[in-house]
Every structure is written in structure tokens, then in C-alpha cells.
Image (tube, rainbow, N blue to C red; front, side, top):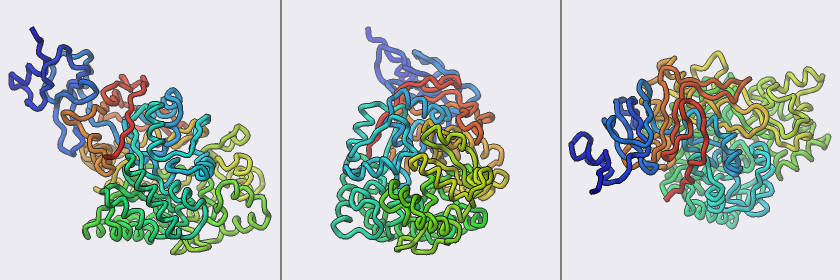
Length: 574
């Protein structure tokens, strides 16, 4: 006699909807989560419900307390939500490491509830790249490359196949970074591409989209994005628009250029027809914080016009990036090695120092001699900290401001950073302060989060060096804490901003929601206690009160402890 699955019996008795029935089976469900307050990602009000998992998918939702299960989690008094979707990750090279190293570097991200990351952001990444571009990118990406990780000349499809073959510890999707596209066509040269080069970029983009990329990203304060004009970006965005995929941008600048950079983003959306996303909307430098209201108003007006425009935010007032981003564009032509050579030339060195202290960016910044974003001009030498270095030689400088190091040494801050870049062969990370606020003044930062077009992101990783940005281990828990403490929005709305909403923007149709038949990416947390514990001084501390994390039906965090495992899938657009 065939024994019916417990869920099937409940379906027959009418105790749960028939749509939740898993049919006949000889075994209990794999995992049952009971007693939770369910937030399904839709933004609907929470409800009490149990969830049953079979073969990595959600088999049933309802009153399932009497269903047989191989394992049962009692989540009474806690929230059960979809796993968080970090649509702005820079784990591109971490995911190329062996799985033991991945677990070490991504454990804190997973432990705060992240089950899916999107890489290829800010125009940065490893593919698609030809042989020459791969060499240039190796130096450009050195600051975000864990020790022992090597890259090759890969297409996007080959990069994804490499991730599949090596295994990934959480789900990963990729955008096509504009940097490798353009570098493969014309190196790190300024100026507009001719018709042949633009056609080559377009062809590589089309192929990458065919191979599963979810859209295109650009980083317009970094080379080569800073050398690209609006027409080039519109042309490439039009390719993406024809597939109804996403175009994201780290805009031209977030200080003097913030308003025209936002207007450019809107122009790209209008002219290309693409869905366009403003990555980590921010204002850099105290005197530019008031511009945030104007940016939000400009983007609201664009949406009222019918354009598809969205944004994301990391809820911190310091941002992590590469130290080379402080230098003027002409000094970055040709790549990191050429920058280091110019730093040894007295004339070039004097010119760089003078421009860092005196030059104000003007529109359009891609013209010869243009500059989209002078970070030193925006926040000062005391607003920039050393975040990571490649060798022990400079390890004692991590966490310190360039101004503070210079005062101690009796040097000019420019000479400090020039020597540091030389000693570390350009592989230096930095933290930039005064991002939409400071530690004691975050109301404008929170206004970006409150806006209904905002998704929550981390924009931070731990590469195993120096002091990582605390967002890698705390961004989502911090957003939950701040929303609770400041009463920013209902919990179900904030969870939606971390789950279904970013998944929908990227095109991850089966992620970010809890519904029968979908992959079982789940997080259980205490809504009254969840909080970030990572700080600038102790950035690797895990979040508090996140008790369970499930990735594709597999437990990765158990009773608040990361237990690991290689449970992720490489996701591809169809």
C-alpha cells in the first residue's frame, strides 16, 4: 500500500489549499519551519504560517504543525522572510576562490540573511575580456582580488561556467560591467569609440546577454567609464532595452556633478527606453548633502513621465572603493602601471597634487581634461582612510586618515598616498567619508532609504585584507535596526525592499519571495532584536538575532551560527 505524503493528506482533508499539495511521496518533507510570522516579500501584512520544503523548494505554506518532517525548526516569535537579495555586490573575484575561502569571506554576509548577490556592478568585473583587457583588469581589480585568485580572458558565459564548476556558497547573478567591454575594444584610452569599436562593444554585450547576464552596469567615475560620453552609454543601453533588462550606473559624480549626473541618467533612460537604476544614490561631501532632495525630486518627475527609474542605498556614511579613484583622469590613462610611472615623474606628480587640491569638476567631464569627481576636493584629506593594502609593509596604516598619517610623518598627504600606491603596486582600498551624512547626522541618508524607489544593498565585501567595510556583515541588519528605531516604514515594506523588489528589478523571477514552488531561500530573525554589530573598528562582527538562513533548501546558518556549505546556484537570465 502506498503511503501518502502528510501534505497530501492535509490537502485531501481541506486543511491547506490544494495548490500547496506535494502529491504522493514515501518520505516526510525535508524541512519544516513552524510558528513563524511570515513576510512573503510582497509587502503584504505579516501572517502566521508554517512553511514546508522538499528538494530545495517551497512545498506548502499554511497550518502545517502536524506534517511529518525530517527536520523541524521552531521559529515561534520570529519572522520568516525570503533570503535577502543584495543587488549591489562586488564579490566577483571572491566567488572565483575555492569554496573554503568563499565561506571564510562571505560567511558574515550570509549570516545577516543574504542568499543571493548580483555582481558586475559599477562597471567593474572580469568579463567579457580579451587577453589584453584581462591583463589590464587584473591590475585595476587588484584591490578587490583575494590572495590566490587569478583571472583569464573569459567571455561572460565562461566566467559563469567557471563559477558553476568551482561551486558557489550562495546564489549569484551578474550584470555586464561596462569596463571590460570598453577595455576589450579600446583599452584605457579616452575619447569616443569609432564605429568599429562601438560595434565590437555592442557585439560583446549582446553575447553576454545571450549567455545569461541580467543587464549592463557602468562606473562613470572610474576608468574607462569616465572617458565615455552619453551617446556611447545610450547606444549600449538600447541593446539592453531590447531585452527588457536592467541598466545600472554609478553616476558621473556625487558632489559638484550630482545634479547633471542624475540628469544624464534620466536622459539615458529616456533616449534608450531602458529600465535604469541609480546605484547607491548619495551625496559626497557635507556641502552637497542638500542636493539629495533635488535628486529625488528629479527622479520622481522622470517616473511621472513614464520612465522606469529606481535606486538603491547602503545605510552608512562612509563608502569603500579603490584608492586610485582619487586621481585625475589623465593620470589613469593606460592603467595602474602607467599611474605608478607618472607618480615617479616630478612634473606629473606636481600636476596631480595641484589638481587634487584646486580643481573643480565641470560638465561635461568626459571631454579632454575633464574630471567627473574630485574626492579629495569633496571630503578633504581627513575624509579619506586607508581600508586595505596588499602587503604587511603598509598594514599599520589601515584605518587611518591620509591627513593623520601625513601629520605624523611631517609630509603632505599627497606624498603619503603616492608612496603608498607605489609600495602596494596600486592595490590599495579606501574609505571615503561624508557620504550623505556623518555618524551623528543621518537624516538625509535615511530620506534616500525611505523613498519608495529604494532597494537596500551592501556595496561591500571582505577580501581578506585590512579592514573591510562593516556593511559586508551588517548592511541589511542595520537597515532593519534603523527602521525599527526611527519608525521609517512597516517591517513588511522594508523586507520587500530587501527581497522581492530588488529581485524584480534585476529580473530574478523566482527569488525574493515565499510562494509554493519557488526555491527555498529563507531567513528567520527576531524583528525586535535584529541589529548590526559590525563597526569601523570591528568590521567583521556578525549581525545579531538572525537565527536561521536557508539557501536552496539547505541550512547555512543554524541557531545564529554559520555552519557553511556550498549551497548556491549560478543564475542566468533567460
